Length: 151
Image 1 (cartoon, rainbow, N blue to C red):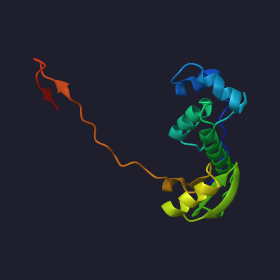
Image 2 (cartoon, helix red, strand yellow):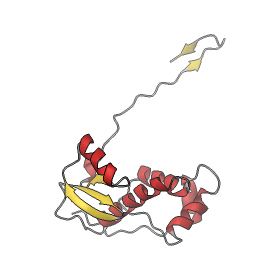
Image 3 (cartoon, helix red, strand yellow):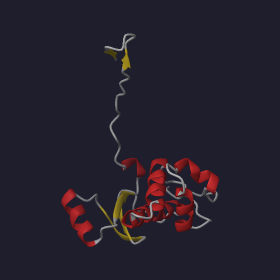
């Protein structure tokens, strides 16, 4: 059910530029992950962008390990390694599966982070990923004389 047979092509300097927000990040990212790096097919775009930024920022090595754990999780998901655990959450640390289970409470998560600060926990069923509530956008403009705003 979750085994994805598709595979993304290797990333190139050009294909990674869309994530760059300051010069040099693409070179740093490729230096860290290698020239044959492929994003996991199932990894959402917003998580790819987050992983790119954190891995490219060499000063935040703690953040790197968290993002490498995320890439590991999505590669394992693509390979079908979580079949039979679709209703579980997976805890990953040091790019290894630590356990399958229920979603941690805040207290449990804090205890895990004391022992494994780079650990992540994600649901096998990606529809259970936390979602942001829809937001409303308000556009404000100045009136012609510039003294007032209209919404």
